[in-house]
Structures are given as C-alpha cells and as structure tokens.
Amino acid sequence: MKRIAVLPEGSVSHEAIDFLFNGEALDLQHSKLISDIFRAVDSGSVQYSVIPIENTIEGSVSLHMDWLVNEVDIPMQAEWVYPSIQNVIGHGNEFVTGDGTYDFGKITKILSHPVAIPQCQNFIRQHSPDADLEGVNSTAEAVEIVKKNPGKGWVAIGTKLAAQKHGLDIMAERVTDHDNNYTRFVLIGHEPVSIPREADHVKTSLLVTLPEDAPGALHQVLSAFAWRKLNLTRLESRPTKKRLGSYYFYIDVIETVDSVLLTAAMAEIEALNCQVRVLGSYPCYTYPSRK
Image (tube, rainbow, N blue to C red; front, side):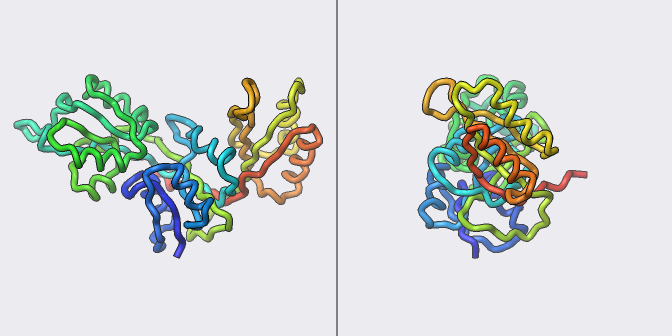
C-alpha cells in the first residue's frame, strides 16, 4: 500500500489524491503544514507527497515551487488537475431565517486557505462584505476551526468532504468566481509511481539559471526549444534568493527527458553557460470535462 503525505483530511488535496488513484487503497498521512508534507517524503517516512502548485485563478503557488527548488531535492513523479469546488460551511442554525434560507449578512468571519479566499471574492462582496477574512493552513483546518467555535458567526470556505467529516452545514455550494477553477497537483517522491489511469501525456520540468550579464540569453534558451518544435506549457521566473534581479526560470516541456530532441535542447542551453536542473519527467493526467 502506498504511503502518501497529504494536507488535512477533507482538504482539496485529499479529494484530489483520492481521484488520482481511482479507489485504490492508500495509507494517507495527513499534516496541517505544507512544510511537514515536504519533509515527510524527504525524511523517508512516506513514499510520496501531494503538492498543489498552480490554480486557475490565483496562478502558481510560489511558496510550494520555492520549496521544490530550495529546500528539497525530490523529483516530480506525476501531475494531475482537479477542480477546486469551494462551499460556504458553518453552523447553519446561526444564520437561518424564518423562511429557512440563510442570512449571510450575519457572518462575522470567513476562514479558509489564503489561496481559496480570493477565488470566492464575488460571493463575499455580494453577501458578506463586512466579514473579517482570515487565512489558515488549509480549507480543512478552516472547517475544523469553525466547528470548534459555534455561536460566533464564523464560516469556512472548504470542501463537501470536510463538511461531512465535521458534521457542519453546507450553506452555499460552488461559490468560486469561475466554474473552471482547477488546481494542478504534483506527486513528489524518489521512485516512479504506478497509477491506475491512462496518462494524457508526459511532461518534463526544468529549472534554468541564466549566466550573469548575458544579453539575449533567455531568447537563446527559448530558441533551443522553438526550432526543435518542442511545446512549452509553462515559463515562469522566480528569484534565486541570492541577489536582487537574479532569477530562475521554470520551464515545462511536453516531452520525455530522454528524448533525442529534449536531450539536444538541454545540451545547447548548457553550451550557452546556463545551468539546467531536471525537476522531474512524469505522466500527466487530466480531469474529465463536465457535460
């Protein structure tokens, strides 16, 4: 049985890993802090860890990407997308009106993950503009906190799974601003993983550091992919944390790391005096479209 570290029970990460393995029995080790999720696989206490790295609305989760680069050296073994379906969850009896509906104006505080709250701004502005907003480690932790604080007018933005676990009411469903709100996850670990699904394609993630004071270096790097017709799905810069104005570039390529074309492209980039680090070469899985 695969031993996997994941954010708390009832989080979107929990729902996502259940989806990826399609009912396969897993030994899930839940932690509140993403740092503990990274350290669990780094220490060997689990085989794999689930890491959210990008969201349709909020973009990249920079903290998690920086952990992959600066704190640990653990390859990505799989990537998949999963819908981030957020709901307003609370003690419904605190907000119910005489006609059985909820008065969201009574909400005094809304708790959730800092990435989830901005995904629901339209609902918050329309229904609870005066509520305090508080970020916590996960949507699941937000639901747990609300459960432990009845009578205060607090609600959480989280998953149906978390509401069921804690016995709270789903007061409003699907409150994200956009219907196409998806999160991209990666499974990191030191060994390849078997997954009971058919992969959509294989992707390789690279970290490229340009030489200092080399005008046109990024253009030359991109040209190494372009003339070989290698499809880049992501290009993003992040500071190296060494000095101001010094950046890494994350590059995702739809190709296996050992292909002739990608091997040659990396060799050409290294010949430009750039540093190239492979963060992983892994299968990618899509989420079925809703009809």
